[in-house]
Structure formats: C-alpha cells, structure tokens
Length: 122
Image 1 (tube, one colour):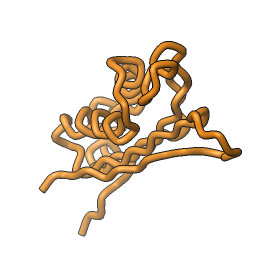
Image 2: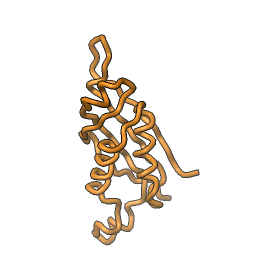
Image 3: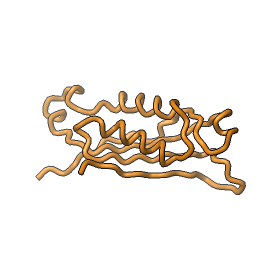
Image 4: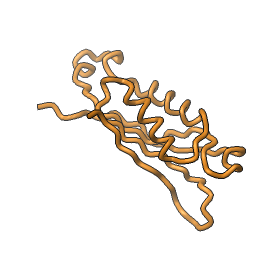
C-alpha cells in the first residue's frame, strides 16, 4: 500500500500588499509561506527525473507570484489562492498552506500570526 508522499517548502518569503488597512496596501510587507503538497513521488524515485515530480522551485516561484499579486484583505483568502494553484496540478491530492504575517498591525507584542488551510480532492 502506498501512503502519500510530501513535498514541502517552508519559510518562503515574498513581498505583498495584503491586509484590511489602507496603509498595509500602500506600504506592503513580507509574508512567509509554508506549503506541503501530498503526491506520489514513486515514479520520480524510479526514474530520477525531475520531469516526473512536482518541481519545488517552480512551486516556489508560483507562490511568490501569488503573494506579490492582487491584494486581498485576509490571510485566509491568500492561502486559498495558493492552495487552488497547487491543486490545479492533478498529481496533488492535498495541499497544506500556511501564510505567516510576522509584521501584522497588532498593538501588543507577538511572535507570529498565521493561518493554515488544508485543501484536497474529494
């Protein structure tokens, strides 16, 4: 029996202009993204060919482009856009996306703010 394999990219930093406040849209800030993709890597492990896997470099570039793209109010919306992009590849069975906003405008000291979503095929 095969269990799902995982390909992860963690700590990806990208600049975006997301948030509910106008100054967040104007000034922008860095967001940190973690993604985990569930897929089978069996064929790639047998062929040793990058064409037979989901290329994490290409995933990283797409995620950065989404973060740098059209602004949204909520981290939940941004995470969903990223998950939708990942799931567009039919080899992905589950996408786990965490969007961190380390410079969120919160008036008390904090280490991090994040939203994690899990989206899969039914």
